[in-house]
Amino acid sequence: MKKQGVLIVIFMLIFTTNCSNELTFEDFKSSVNEINRKQRELFEKSEEVSKMIRKVNQKFPGEKITFDTSLGLSSEQEEKLLSLIQNEKNVTTKGLLQELLESEEEIFELKEDIQNIQDRLPKPYIVKRGDSHMKIAVSYLMDVEGLEKKDARELVQRVALVDEMVPGFYIWLYYNSETGDFGTYVTQGEARVNPNRVRYSIRKEKLQEAYEKGLQDAQQDSLATETQQMENLNDSQ
Image (cartoon, rainbow, N blue to C red; front, side, top):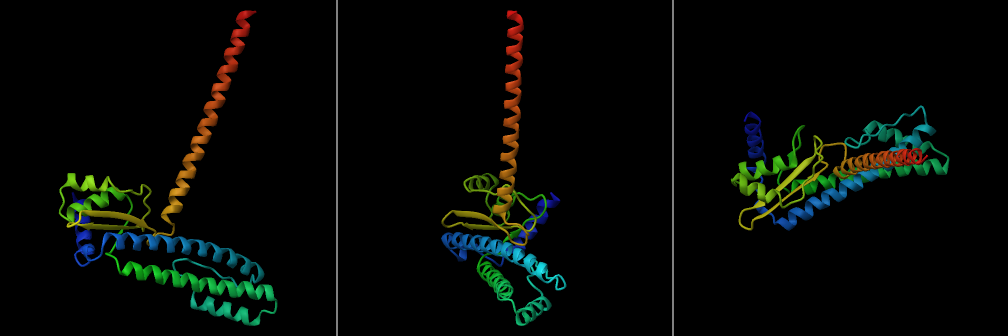
């Protein structure tokens, strides 16, 4: 009961000043999809930057540069990069340094775009350890929108839910009592991993487990068949 009470307080703080009825469901859905699209771009660009930084650090071992997607390059690192670009004579290396600087600026712009979209939406719920998409969505409909538990669960069961929750993910929730529209989506939020990446990793792991189990079962079946054939051969002799 204590945890449920904490959830109610959190929801009220988030949603009392952010009414989801001020925008249409289509606007809400397209905005969240845009956030997801830009966060995928951000992830891919961050991967590129990490590879470029490894190359730069190999060429300039005395000028160690690090990169954190959530923080980007520090002002000191940017100054260091600019200095390397100005002093570099090799055209290929200079191009690599310039590309790194431009890519870092693209990441900054993507983060700004994502924040601007998020600012137009109702505040999301930030996932904590032990949260589930189902539980948060049902609690929102009951505690904020005033639906009965049965009605809330029926609405939630109609939408696609994300099973793999990571602390820091954002859960976006929308309900319009006049139209009956309800939607909920998950984005990367403050986590360091994208929901699609988590889903892919877990799915790949499960497929590998299934493959290994299938291989093991096939080997056991083959061994059983060979054993049976040997027993039949011995019986015939």
